[in-house]
View 1: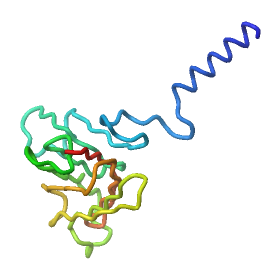
View 2: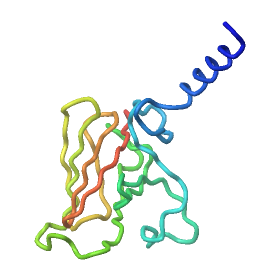
View 3: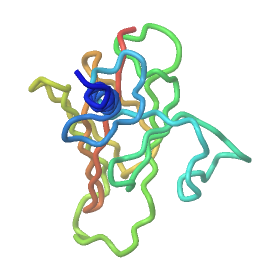
View 4: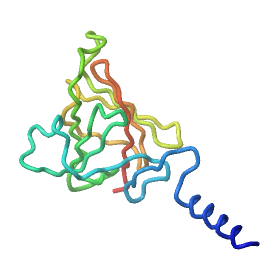
Length: 165
């Protein structure tokens, strides 16, 4: 093989290791998260619209919805299945203020969470009465859960990882 061929082959191998086929690069996921789980727990500042009740430059673990319409502030990280002691799986849901009135004023304010365990048909539904706010969200088994979130005529999605207790 010529030197030009080796350079070309090396470049292809290098690029293959730096990209994903058909997908944009996924941010780092929590330890133990399955490949393809888009759960990204951030620890930087909360956005201004989500930091009411926090003082100063509070930095708390949180996960943004895929559309940026909601953020889940995680307390007792990591979220755990079968926890026998320690903090609960408390999640404070904070919705971005709506730019326009709800498209359906008769839509219930309750936050309805339909969680599906990645790679299975296992589903769980949880509700937060009154809409986004404080909650305890326990799910039946460890893994990557895809959450469909619905409240006040609005929707978003996110992935959360639950580990074994």
